Image (cartoon, rainbow, N blue to C red):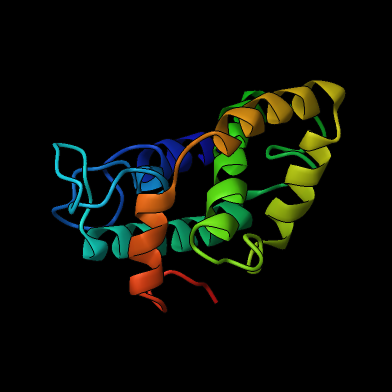
Length: 154
């Protein structure tokens, strides 16, 4: 159920926001509509998707069995959703001003720390972070700064 929730509500355009056909986590980095192009988001769409992320983090938190997603062993469920959290932990604080991505998700906080404590995950996170640090988020950040209050949870 965790993988399905992640795949449908975070990683795909489905979500619970009607009429918006862009994957939810894409709201973290897709350019604003002022840039132009086929994969650009209005401030309203971005705000709806960021709110969707907040809702889905709470849902996923309730599904964590612990200490890993499905119990005592690392499974495909952990590996399938973990990379998304690297993105969330990069973009939500640095671009959207979230002070604590896991503010309403204590189970996810513990889970992410546990998975990331493995040398393999730490290496992958470092590689992902190196790429993310090189991404120019200035256009998205400008929209966020203009529309303060729509993005920060709580």
